[in-house]
Length: 68
Image 1 (cartoon, one colour):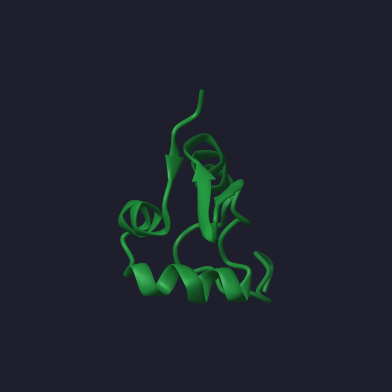
Image 2 (image 1 turned 90 degrees about the vertical axis):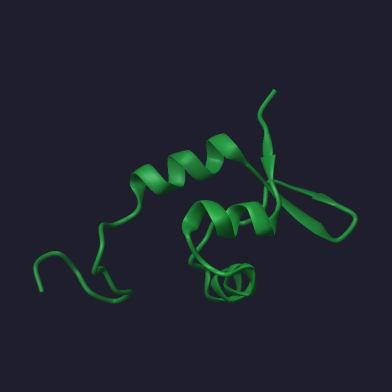
């Protein structure tokens, strides 16, 4: 079975502050949680690994295209 990451663990994996995870979720910059335990969001480690592998590289900004 997959391991799950809490918001704090996700923040650590992404190299951001835990408070940033909530802001990123609000903006749609991280995947939706896979599960909830009560009100605590949890992400499957495999979901995050897949998302990280597929996301644009450093310097990418929303609204920009590779051709621009």
